[in-house]
Amino acid sequence: MFSASFFALFQEIGIGFEETQVLFSNNPDLTSVSVESLRSRLRSLRSLDFDPLALGKLITKRPTVLTDNQIDPLLTFLRDELQGKLEKPRLTRLLSSTEQKLWVSFPQKVRFLVDRGIPVDRVVHVLNKVSLPKVLCGRSVDEIDRTLAFFEPFGGIDLILKRPQILNHDLDAQIIPRVNVLMELSDGDVDSVGKVLVRFPIFLSYSVEHVEGHVEFLSSFAGLDYRQIFRIILVYPAIVTASRERKLRPRIQFLKECGLDSDEIFKFLIKAPTFLSTSFHENIAYKLVLLVKIGYRYRTKDFTVAVRSANRTNSVNMQKVIGMFLNYGFSCEEIVTMSKKHPQILQYNHASLEMKMEYLIEEMGRDIEELLFFPAFLGYKLDDRIKHRYEVKKSVRGAGMSINKLLSVSQETFTGKQKKAHA
Image (cartoon, rainbow, N blue to C red):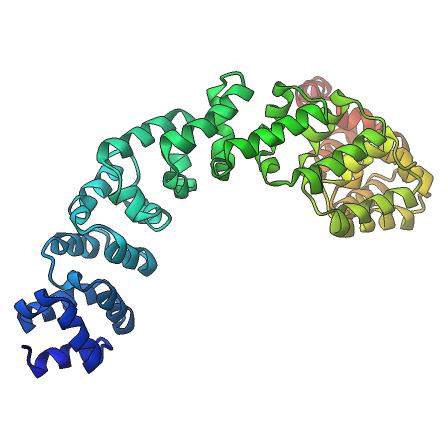
């Protein structure tokens, strides 16, 4: 039998009279615990910032959190060493879904993570991203150590800190087979595989079958070999997120229709890999229309070069670039001519281009048509390269110097000539 003080205590956390009766009826151990012991345990739980409603739900689901003495060291560890920073959903699941006998080893395993290299100030970040019942409670220290040791050649702690969720995967059934796919593609290049994983750790969330499906598609449909496929993955690991049928097939088919062979497709994708995943209707289609409007012939190799460059900017900026050239008096044909010589002009920021063109005309006193012969001028940094070199040379060679020779020589050559002129 229990007194009114029990009812009052449970009412504080939102558990009503009838619920308290059912709770005590189904859990006889509660009757053997004093009100003060229950109050003390509730106080420990409240110290972890449980609000009364959440605490009431936890106790209703797992009343043994009030009676099991194995929980005391865990609560002390969570409060004192982790400073109560474990997110409430993680904490609730730890206390409500984990076998109680596994609570004892939890502090030891967290300290082990720190001993293995996870910074003390980042360990909570890791804990808040993983399944605690599975990763910390369900695995032994040796199993955790084996997983960490496996990741060491592939980015180690940096990889884990970037995406702690990879620890949720089973080492033997998931992680090792998925890494082995990359190892096979790279011909055993551990460093390069590590770069892929650190750059895009979500790669490990995709099954072997899924990745091999992409590899087989790129091999059979695009004619790429393993070395080429891995190089594309290295620069753009997110290729595994693109649907083979909705995105990869139509994009590669387009490149084929433009006359590109497998090696040319590879070179295109290395320089513009996001072409495979960018939205067609909201992005690519606008750029294709702009390129056709200024005079590019659709489905030609020249067209793919322009598309590759345009892939690195958005359609709004590209439209402003074309409009700026038109405002300066260039014809569409001349814009195409310049972009064939220097395709990057289509991707540069329009405001930056305008500043360089103004400097060319107003400060350097040059004819704008010089850009037809040397459009690469627009690719150099205005302050660090164009202004600096022009100011250095104009007193020696005059204002009429070739902008090509002024800018295209290496820094070493330019510096050497500068010293010779002073001498």
